[in-house]
Length: 316
Image 1 (tube, rainbow, N blue to C red):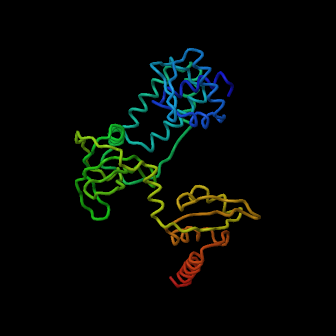
Image 2 (tube, rainbow, N blue to C red):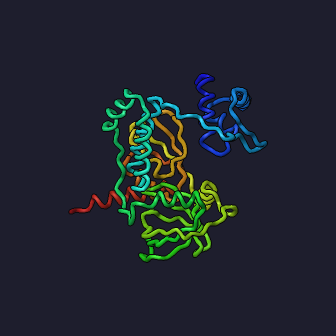
Image 3 (tube, rainbow, N blue to C red):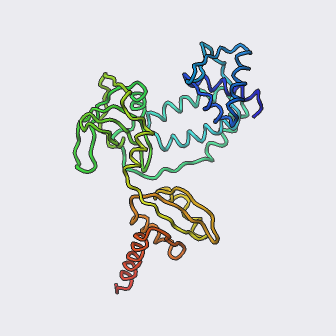
């Protein structure tokens, strides 16, 4: 990226947030802090009213850059985003995103509009089937409540007790994992943080009350705390070259952390609570994998292999 393009991009970035740190700009544009300081001075000399607060960051003082035309690559990235949102967000988010996308498409050059129209049917995202949600219009309301620090009242259906309870919660954030979206919130009934599956919320109401986020955990802090409580066990597995081709998607399901290429294949590291679950997964690869640690997984594999052998040696 040349300097003129970077200056324009920095100005656009400053418009996206109330305060922007120099470190954030340096990371995004792959430059040094000194370069960012120099770029900020250049914008100020050009008449852009940029304010600065020591130790906090930069901000714009009543200034707005007119709309900037998107490049074809940026417009294409939005199309990919729309495909993901179509499958992994609910109707409340899809409707608003579609509206925004139409507005963006309206300012594109005709050739870029035709490019997107031609590309759209050639990109598809498949979502794994999951339990149908009680409601398909919750994500936008939840996002609004998070942003405005509003207390929510949930009619929540427990998966374990098969009962519905009334909960007053202080939303912390939304988190997508497994098969769907989860609302992380402080539950006033339990006086602790809870993970609420959005598709188990039968009804959601805004109470009209707000809460202070000063003493609440942030979403990253909550997730880090949960990981520390899980007592994860390290698993090291060697996959030969043939097996490696078939594990790329599934490895994340079992706590994949890292890998290194070694002679004849790849050694992968996993962190998991469910060692036996990994054992069941590894059975499908036969002799194309080798468990290096822990010993408990080696014992599990021997027991599972013997169980399978005894099963198929029995006459039908």
